[in-house]
Amino acid sequence: MTVSEIATVLAWHDALNAGDLDTLVQLSSDDIKIGEPEGATQGLAAMRDWAQRAHREVSVGRLFVHDGAVVAEELLSDGTVQASGFRVVRDQVTSVFRHRSLEEALAATDMTEADLRDD
Image (cartoon, rainbow, N blue to C red; front, side, top):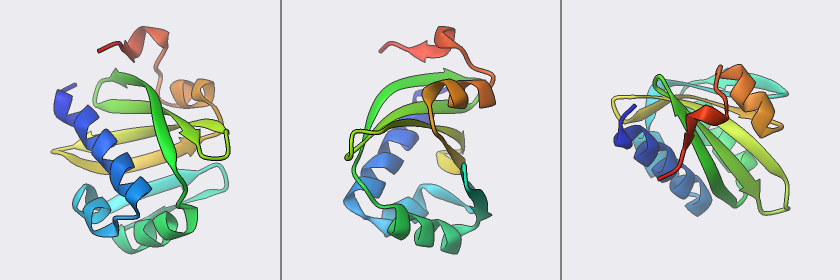
């Protein structure tokens, strides 16, 4: 894990919150995979569509990191808490999968509370 993986995930959230699709594209790989409980999609065009459709304010809470993966606890503007699992390679998000809960995201990425980043 490098600090750049966390910085990339935080910048990705900032761009999503700002509706800055150009920055989202720069921070994402050409074949980015986007998954939600309802299904998955792939590619930059699909990511742009997803970001426009799913746009809502997201505050990042706790971050968990292990072996190149980052799980971000997320508080949505409507008060809902969820989490997303990210894979970052060379400062680009290659996949992001949204989960209904932090526990679900940690289980999907084989992480535990021991992977909590406390800095």
